[in-house]
Image (cartoon, rainbow, N blue to C red; front, side, top):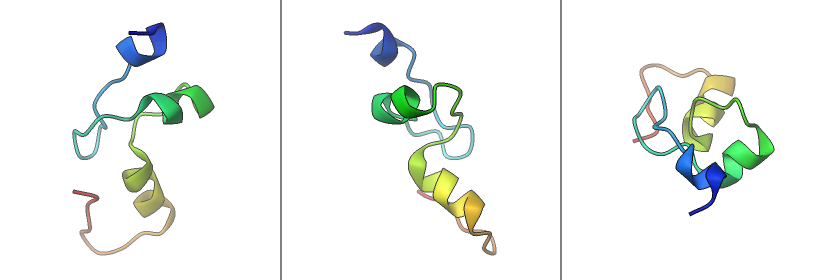
Length: 49
């Protein structure tokens, strides 16, 4: 396991893993890519789960 994979934390919005690739691109990411996409396009009560 790489250091990056060891740092993979749960998404602060849905609890799924943020993902090593996302953290490689954006080391301070706190949400998974699905939740980040929803944040850019606000909708009514949607979650990425």
